[in-house]
Length: 362
Image 1: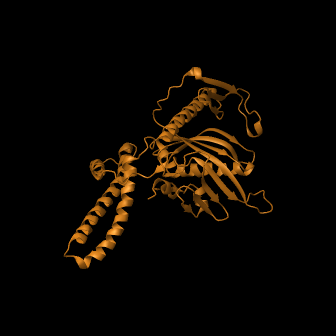
Image 2: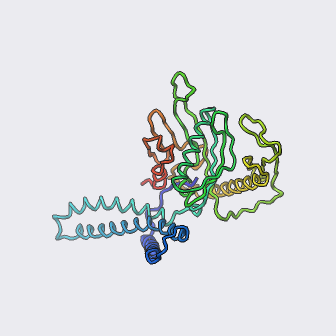
Image 3: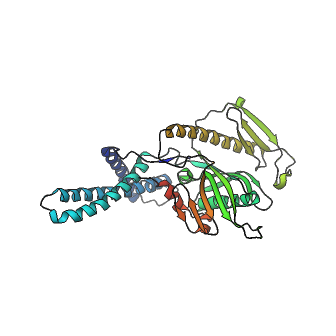
């Protein structure tokens, strides 16, 4: 998971303004192109509309930023004008408010203009595993899987299960699935970590609140993964797919287990009836895991000298608590709390994602 950090407040203002002008010029050109294009076919102009939507968010912030910068300059002129003594106090108060807005918008611009992750537009492979808590943890893992697939539906992303290991009571021991669409990784890159749930299990007769957990991993899948995997470094095992309880469900061995010897990374796929399809899926997961491992190494190296971070990026880190008795979901990195747990678990948690994307401490 990428780290959220403070950016140097002394970034050259001319550099920001140059970038703003470039963005606005591109945005205006695309806006003009859309207005002059009579075709309303979305599929035909999909890339243009997506680019327009992406740039509009930056353009709106940029225009607001420039507006407040101009207001700030006007107020400073009043304060420094010896003939405007009676207005100085009012101008000073307003300047403080405007200054806060300028700093807030400036941070948003720096994030969007200079801190974008090259993988933001990538599809992802997500892995959810039940942690501590027995069957209750497996049921919570199922809740998380539904939460993410509902979020995907709301964003018109496609979902494809790569591998799953279910329990007899409808829970999930482990599930690996891919999400395909626009800006998937950008939205979900901060979901990696330990998700904790506090609730009364249906099997609990005394009404005691139990704490369980599940781990989530989000792996970016760029259009081109520049990773060379030597076939000599792979151990490929073929075995019979198993169902709930471990019983074999197929007479023909089609399940695939691939081990990458240099890293020790293992990828398993058994959901398809075809051995070839299982192998293809297992290889795609293996590539994503190796890519993610290399990405994390680079991030760790860059983060050595950074002191202000929101989360370590460690997947063993507890990142969020889902408290059913209090009907709240709290993210421990942004300190943001949503008080409608049912909506969150139904895929309505964009506010939590935004709290993480916009979390820059002063």
